[in-house]
Amino acid sequence: MSETTTDLTLFEQLGGEAAVDAAVDAFYRKVLSDYRINRFFDGADMDTLAAKQKAFLTMAFGGPNNYSGKDMRDAHAKFVKMGLDDSHFDAVVEKLAETLIELGVSQELIAQVGAIAETTRADILGK
Amino acid sequence: MARIKFKDQTVIAENNETVLQSLLRSNIQVPYGCQQGVCQSCLMRSLDNTPPSSSQTGLKETQQKQNYFLPCICLPENDMTVALPNAEKTWLEAEVIEKKALSINVILLKIKSKEPLTFFAGQFVNLRNNDVIRSYSIANTPNLSHELAFHIRILPDGKFSRFVADDLEIGMPLSFSHAQGSCHYLEGKSEQPLLLIGTGTGLAPLYGILKDALLTHKHQGEIHLFHGSRDESGLYLEEKLTALTQNYPNFHYTPCLSGEVNNEKYTKGRANEIALKQFPKLKDWCVYLCGQPEMVLQTKRATYLLGASLKDIYIDAFSS
Ligand SMILES: Cc1cc2nc3c(=O)[nH]c(=O)nc-3n(C[C@H](O)[C@H](O)[C@H](O)COP(=O)(O)OP(=O)(O)OC[C@H]3O[C@@H](n4cnc5c(N)ncnc54)[C@H](O)[C@@H]3O)c2cc1C
Ligand code: HEM
Image (cartoon, rainbow over all chains, first blue to last red; front, top):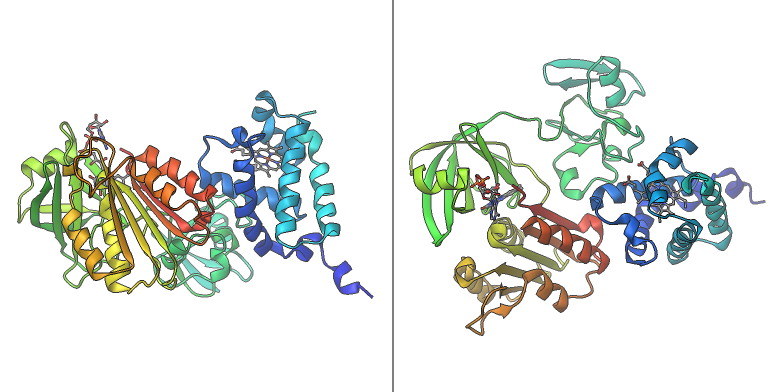
């Protein structure tokens, strides 16, 4: 029955690159507005950070990316030194879920995005 | 098969080969990163044909109009002459045609290019005096006589600005670069509200953008300009701007003074703070921020958090 949907990857079901573009603006705003995590995002150039958020979302949406676990470890190592822990990780995943709800994405797909994010937890937190 | 011309080399892109792949295959060194159109580190500009729009995803609209594209996701449809951003280094020649004081420390400088020019009001060019090169924003709109106008703030020990004040005279030659930057008016969104915030000579690009919007493109949405200065003399276009508000009901001008205020026509405080107090919801607005770098970067973040989309925030930080 649902052949057409199951043939599509998660990334495609979410709407591909256009969905990432739609999500990045709202997601990044949420992250910068959340006092629990925004200190990690201070200082850096906003356009650069937004481009990296796009990379983040593409990855979380199961889209094409070239990041290895080690890349993720290296990219976040300086934040682990600043005290990055599970609570911050959970907050980011929460912001991601809120963004997807606002974009009208189904609970089922949101759960899949959450599961992908979860696979990166150890690397992000340098465990 | 398309021919890709880069500097003095030409390579032929094979079928299903991106512009980046063709260049790298031919041992032409250009910067690149993700190779999937995300990181934008390979950004290039086509100097002739319009690049395929799929190679412009994620770029600002102003960049798209100027034929910027991402070679890593560009399967060329036509021959293209490509260049790295800002790599079109040639200097153009102009003649000084006007120089007058706009206030005690701001000079209006007008130059006339010896050859035809393409630019948007609000972009900037580099001006050169021997080895001193400085950027200045274009305060006028494109015109048939190829003239460029600048508002130059004279700094006490400023190398270039003192040269303008003390040495430059009408009739003298001046070298300048092609216009650069994405801080300019965008056609096609005539109803969008515009927020323009500038400090000091940050008014120069805003004035160009404003005239482009009102006079050239008959912008219909509300336009709010906040100009900030420490003292009254810094509000150097007050008369002209006030006159514009009388002819264009959708244009609003708020002169702000961070120093002492002795006249009720001025609002006391910093231009960016006053503007955001008045407009705390900026969803769907287009924002232009020009002048002092700290003000610009801080306000960029603030306007984004108030709802403006990042692609709708254009800045010119006058960093020296
Ligand atoms: C994209 C862009 C657009 C610009 N557009 C304009 C414009 O339209 N109009 C304009 O007037 N300028 C503009 N500027 C700034 C301009 O490029 C020069 O930096 C400025 O004119 C000073 O150059 P100068 O050679 O006179 O001074 P410099 O010799 O470079 O500096 C002299 C001294 O003044 C100090 N100084 C430098 N800038 C300032 C400042 N803003 N306030 C106080 N002290 C300072 C320096 O630290 C130094 O000690 C722009 C800059 C950029 C990057
Ligand atoms: C949920 C799992 C996460 C994933 C999949 C992820 C993924 C990414 C990716 C792909 C990048 C870009 C790396 C680069 O190209 O340099 C990045 C950068 C970044 N991440 Fe994460 N991230 C996650 C969690 C977090 C958390 C919890 C924080 C902090 C609260 C965080 C803060 C940052 C910051 C600040 C950057 C920018 C780094 C820089 O500018 O160098 N990330 N992340």
